[in-house]
Length: 448
Image 1 (cartoon, rainbow, N blue to C red):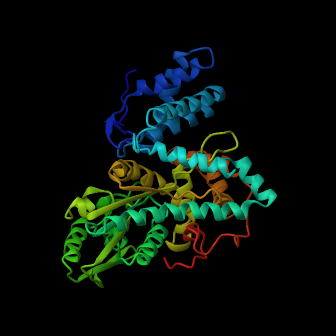
Image 2: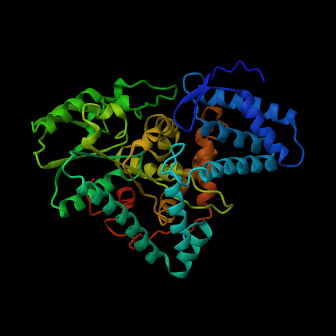
Image 3: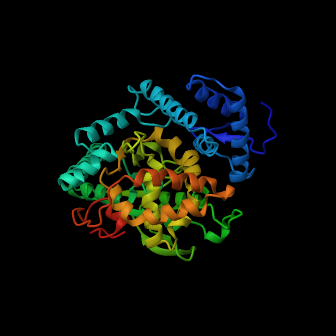
């Protein structure tokens, strides 16, 4: 198929960019029509062209969509054209491709930037604890087993952190910096706190540096047509100053770190004194902790890289697995509302920046990590629903007819279809004060 589309490249799952090809979209749709028993090239080409129009309306020529973005739009266009059966088969086709990648990767820790072996362990744990699906989760709530599952889930998360701490202790003579990295709202802050507690118990001194304070002033970042800032890239941070300060800290010199105010978007330089003693480890909690440019001035053997992600294996009412990024989107909608002066719907519409940066600047570096922690909590959705469902519902109606907000509408609709079957829980007294979930819903004993 020939195309004059202004979109020239797409982002693959490994973070690399390749040429955009309309025929690949058409071929995938054709396979979905074939699975209905009647392959239809004409329908495949027609839908592919409509998908291209939707992509251009949503992303224009200024941004590069990901494979994930394109597949979401394909599903949406199929549904809009009442090709429900083909849409269902396309979803199944996507899932089968993912499972095929998994089948090839069980003997590896990370393949295609996905830790398949870890996912299998998570799925087995969820099945063993009857919290692998909406149906089983609702049953636990109804039968009174929910509080006990919360305890077990928190213990699993804590045990993973303790194992990471043990590895750091074993290599104490070499490690000077511990990087806690991962995508937005994966729980890096709580994980950093809990890891520091374990290091303290092992007699290891440490200090933490807040990389968020190294953001450039928000006004210096470009805006899109909606007036939204793209501050999700590593380049939104003053990487040169970070590296300069890291070298000084490892030389036991005093540095004056900046202070960034998220509500005003303004940074002040030379505000906080920080010094790392010779026997101390520096903890860095950052989205881009694995990004090479973040710590390029420090030798690799002096760093321990911990990657954290919501690697949940939780099935919706129709059997599809909840996306990790949707889990984190819900967390961030609450956090931004309570701490960053943003409405939940603003977080939703900004999420395409978040996701695109993750695919390009965060997830590809998972292969360089020393340890992986799963921060998905099987019990969090009932508490997230009670706080966010009304906003999700409103977003569906607000962006239904807006072609430039198709990505936001797709996400809102997908999350709505998942949450509408989950039994909401209003009373969160069964969630411990040191739970990772408290980082987002409030009531934590930790100070963030």
